[in-house]
Image 1 (spheres, rainbow, N blue to C red):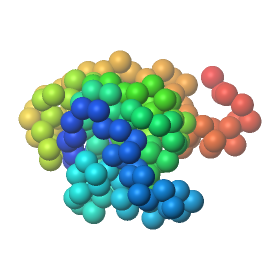
Image 2 (cartoon, rainbow, N blue to C red):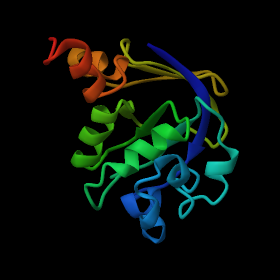
Image 3 (cartoon, rainbow, N blue to C red):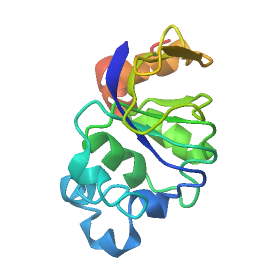
Image 4 (cartoon, rainbow, N blue to C red):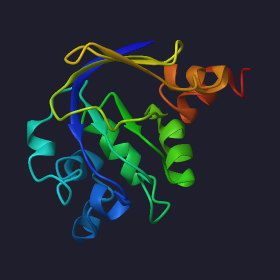
Amino acid sequence: MSLKGKAWKFGDSISTDHIAPGRYFHLRTNLPELAKHVLEDADEDFAAGMEPGDFVVAGRNFGLGSSREHAPRIIKLAGTSAVLAQSFARIFFRNAINVGLPVLEVDTSGIEPGDQLEVDLQAGEVRNITQGETLTFAPLPPVMVKILGDGGLVEHFKKYGDFNL
């Protein structure tokens, strides 16, 4: 599974409130509308400027805060192909896999805003086309790659009726 797009760079400790601002709580039943506001408290240009396939690139502890599933869902709905960060809040990481959003722990310190990236989930590589560098990460376990390939945990269960390991 290969993903290509541009990097949108964020810092450390991007919370679920940065991702899905609480003032839009009334939109939680209209996720496509909520996705129009994704990450606007961290970068007001992100939702309108990102293109399908682009990457969210962040520092440490991405997704801290509440366990709301809306946060990874709207990142995915906005068209983001994956989130790359130095570390993730564990519940955000699990929710992201469950909704079919790839999340990769990798050293993002050398990635600059606008860098063109290519990610190979199975090889565990992020190729920074702009800078001519390759970063490595621990490949996701095969079951997670399968869940992501199926579009998330619900779609995986619809397809197989159970975990198909």
